[in-house]
Image (cartoon, rainbow, N blue to C red; front, side, top):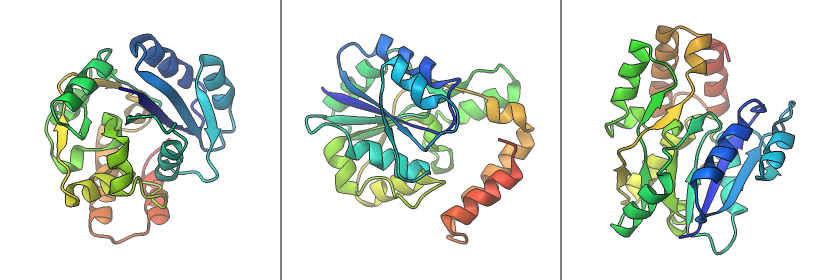
Length: 233
């Protein structure tokens, strides 16, 4: 199976090299493309990504929805599967084998649970909840794999989604009849958002954002602006 790994970035100079080297070390020969889609970073993200061995493209627009879709569009024609992952997430070392096994067994789209790179009790509780397919826990930190043909059949990430892009995509996938498979081994996710904000503050921001999105009460850019007003980056 030929896999393209797609990583959206914006000012991730301190992290992007680590994830690229990690993926290259654990991907054997199946990852044929490692695409970093940058949102016009003002730091050394692009330089560091290239030095680590990734293909880097600069998105004409910022926002994960647009960047993820732009990366998918730039994957080679012979790519079988797309794997979307954030720059502050490390997949399980066996992610290639687990994804391939899932596809062989008939999966079309899937994700992983995750743990934080912190031993704080409340973050361990958060991570425990990602073992379940509760829709409100299905954010992009889990990472997402999908057969390329199915990605475009569903319509891809909504480019107008500058926030909640994963929820929007999975909602449309479910409506189209796709069943999300939850794998077992966890990704490791940075706890940096919780280190800059209290646990309660992050939970409140997530709760408000999710419910405003679910009810269609705010436009994506307004919703993103509100989210970051509630949090320190």
